[in-house]
Structure formats: C-alpha cells, structure tokens
Length: 166
Image (cartoon, helix red, strand yellow):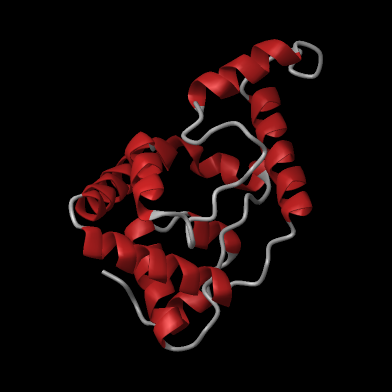
C-alpha cells in the first residue's frame, strides 16, 4: 500500500530503488497529478547495494509479475495502450533530461564492480565473452539500428510488438 508523497520524498536513492515497481508507478502518477516532477531511480554504487542483493530476485519476481500483468492488460486493450502512451509522454515531459553519459558511466561501474565481487575474471580483456553474455541476457526487442524508440510517439502497433517481446 502506498504511503503519502511526503514519505517517498524522504527516501534516499537506495531506499527508493528497493520499492516495488507497482508502488513506484503509483507514486509517479500521484506526483504527476500534483504537478510534481516524478522521481527517477539511479544505478548508485554497487558497494552500497551489495548488502541487499540477496533480496533482488525476490523483489524482481514481484516486479516482473506486476509488469507482465500490466503489459498484458495494455496489449489486450487498445484504449489502455493509448492511455499508457499518454502517461509515458507526460512522464517524459515532467522529468528533466537525464545525463545519459553520466548514467552510462554509473551503470558500467556498477556492473564492473559486480563482476569483480562475484568472481568474474578478465572482463577487461575477454570482452567478446562478456558482450556475448550481455547479448544473451538482453536480446534485442527492437532493431539494432542506432535509433532508440520513442515510446511516447511510436505507432501503437509498433509499441505492441516491442512490448510483446519484453
């Protein structure tokens, strides 16, 4: 059950990142209704998150179940697809543009620190092996064409296709 917005505003980045996706989306909708900027999650530092990693699969299972249900509802109802796209556009308009280069560095550092801590060796030199593992874990859901899809303006039929692959 979601608390009041004030509660979520007081959470630090690590606490925010550990909230269930359903709560995060409820908070975002409430923030948008109140004309407030929705809060964004950050990768953070691996060393600070490491004590909580044993729970990440359990939390993710709940998040995946919620997300799967939401996606299936949208895929089965064109009106919900349009509403979801409208909410996505509104969210994008309210959130300041991310510093993608800084986010890439933060994500890369998190993954590298995890690899080191988890005992993966030579990721710095055996790049093709690690790239293959990433590509296997994250197969493309969109064409590899150096164009990031804009889910706020994409044709609904294309969005349906991408969502069904996620």
